Every structure is written in C-alpha cells, then in structure tokens.
Amino acid sequence: MIESPQMEIFYIKHGITPVEKFWDEVIYAAFLEKGIKVEVFDFAKQTLVFRQLLQSSFKDTPLNQLIKIAREYASALIPQKIYSSKSNFIFFMNGHHLNRVVLKIIKDLGRKMVMWQIDDPYWTDLSVEMAPICEFIFTVDSAAVPIYQENGCKNVFFLPLAFPSKFENFQKEKSYESDICFVGTPFKNSYRVKVIDELSGFLKNYKVKLLGSHVLSDSWQGALSNYETLKSFIKEEFVPYEESVKYQLASKINLNIHRDSFSHNMDRNNNKIMAKSPNDRTFILGGLGAFQLVDDLRPDLGDLFEIGKEIVTFSGPQDLKEKIAFYMEHDKERQTISSAAQKKVLSRHTCGHRIDKIIEALSK
Image 1 (spheres, rainbow, N blue to C red):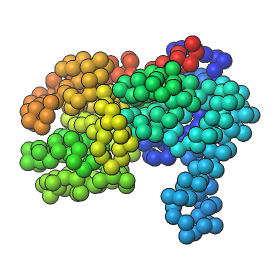
Image 2: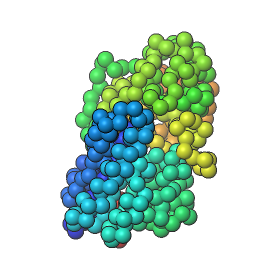
Image 3: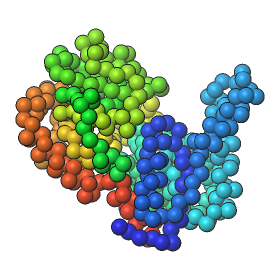
C-alpha cells in the first residue's frame, strides 16, 4: 500500500448515468480504504435538485434544456466549496457535464485537477477539451493517451478500470444459472450483435441469457435480425452491476464482446480512435473467477493477461462457436483458466491497485 498522509482529495461525484454512479461509489470507497481524506461534492444530486426546482417553475420548457441549465447551476456551486476546502487535488471521473469556465476558475485557485476518463475512446470529442484544464488525466484506453498529451496535458496515464472489492464474496445462486451469458448494450449493426445474430441457430440449443439495454440506445428486438430465435433468452432492460455479476458468476461461459470504437448512436469519437484496451467486464469476470471468451480486437489484452492460460480469445463467429462447443464439454479446463484469471486479477487488477497508481502519480 502506498501511503500519502498529506494528500486530501475533493471528489466531484459527477455520475449521471447508472454506470457512472456505480464507478463513482466504487472509487470513492477505494480512496477511503487507502486512508485518503476525501471531501465530496455530489454534482449529480445537486443537478437533480435544480432540475426539480426548474421543472416546477418552467413546466413548458423541454426537459433536456432544463437539465442543461441545472448542470450550470450545480457547476457554479463548486468553486465556493473548493475555496473553503483544504484539499490539494480535485478529482472527478469523466467530467464532460461540468462547466469548463467553472473548472478554469477552480484551476486558478491553485488546485490540481485530476480526471479519470472511464469512457474512452467513445467520448473523446468531449473529453479532449479537459486536457488543458487538468494536471493529471487517467484513461481506461491506451489509445487515448497521446490524444490528451497532444492537447495540453503532460501527465497522462493508462489506467483501466478494475475489480471492485465489494464483489469478492459473491456466491453462485442457482436461479441465475445458464450455459452462456452476455451482458451489454445491443448496439444496432455492431460487431457484438452481428456475432450473436450469426450464431443464433447454434445458441438456441443452450441455456442462454442475453441481458442489457439502454434507454438512449437500441433494443435487442430492434438490433437482432434473428430476434425471434433468441427472444426467450433476452432480458430487455438495463441490468445494474450488482445484478449482472450474479448472472455472470453462475454462467458456464460468459461472452465478452467489446463495444465498437465508433459508428453507434452513443458515439462521440469523430476522430475514429480505435480502442486498444479491454473493458471493465474483463476484470470483473476475472475477479469473480467466471470463465469468459473475449474477442481478440483489443491489443492490450495480451499485456494484461496470458492468452490461453488466464483468458481465452476468439477471432470471429466460427471460432467462437467452436470454442463454446469445446469448453461446454471441458469443465476442468474452464475452471483452470478462470482460476488463473482470478489469481491474476486479485493480485494486480483490483480497484485498490488502481488507487495505488493514482496516489503514486499524484505524489511525485
């Protein structure tokens, strides 16, 4: 454990979406576990308060406009809070909802701005604007590192998400069991949807669970050409992390098919930066000791795990089909590989390990 008794952090909980909120809570808890003094400003909560006040007075104004105004009001509260704080670092995840002028005011107060961008490279069009403002940027994808450096931030580090300690004691529950499980947003025309579509006739012979959707994105029904073949396996709703890990832990095989780097309806990556690094699901599944088959489209995967011994990749639908068939019949091999992945994750890739890296960087 890296100790830094003088370090105090002002944490702006920026989480608007369920995913952002989850990681805000996990990382906040990880800072506390390391003995770091943390003062919190809940930007998302303040935004909601202002939005509700505005809605009561401006009932005919479109909701998206009210949300934008509410965020401006919430942002305006931050400098005063920081001015009276003794914290020497201002930390937030993502940050594209925060007012840039307000952030520059905070920087002028002499505080060091630290951002952990957890949506790279999908939102780089917006997050790159933070480069001149932040003294430190941590990004979950190594492909984004040079982008931030070229746009004004000298201290940029590759730091993927990791396994939350809150999941360490989860146990398998029979009601969640399946042969094959996939959790994720079904982006229309995406690689993940095309793979599942192509294998629909094969998958229907197993006990399958397809979970996840997003109010701002596509549904399984709208994305899958072979929806009728698979509809009995689909849960058409967003599944929180705490619930999704129960399905993943109880599945014999988890499909980890990465989100496309761009060309989907939640894409803010006009420069078409190709993602290189594995997603958070890779580390969560590994930490759970849940077996996963991962697409081979992220080059950094081999730097973090030993392919074939700690994790198994597939090169396309046919290769995935063959590996599903093989590992469904070889329980011992699945267990050996998933146990090796779990050992690696718990020794190197927990959220505590990531906080150590942040503390080390900020302490230099």
